[in-house]
Length: 170
Image (tube, rainbow, N blue to C red):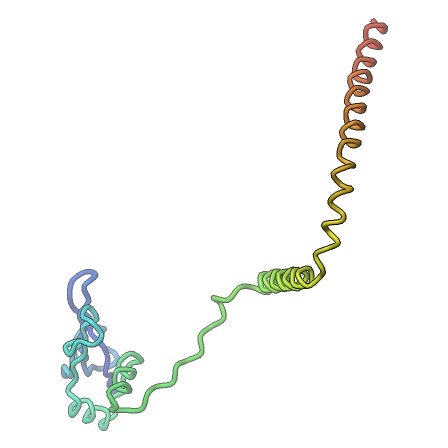
């Protein structure tokens, strides 16, 4: 008969309360057990003394007889110093982004780094040159406006020509 020290759930819906029991591994979770060796109430604060209550001498007895604690109970026992802390198993990598998403993120980081480097270089460059370039740009603006007005006047004449061709064809 293989024995397990495990949690047996009680309490109401969304208000769990667990008993730490020694049971045959073939019995259901909340089914028949051999001995109740503690309680665990996750609804109270972590520093509350009634959150975890264990009968250490009985737990040591059952471990000596060959009972194996479940993962959660082994963690409780490790924190209490009854046995050594269990090793945490490696988690799967399914929660990580896939390869293409990682490549895109890397490209975004590189682009941001290059923009930051360019901004740093621009800040280090002397500021006198852009001031000299602004004055001729203001003088060129009226010439551009005159060119745009001439283009706007020519455009309606071109649009009218196809309509006259259509009238002549009729």
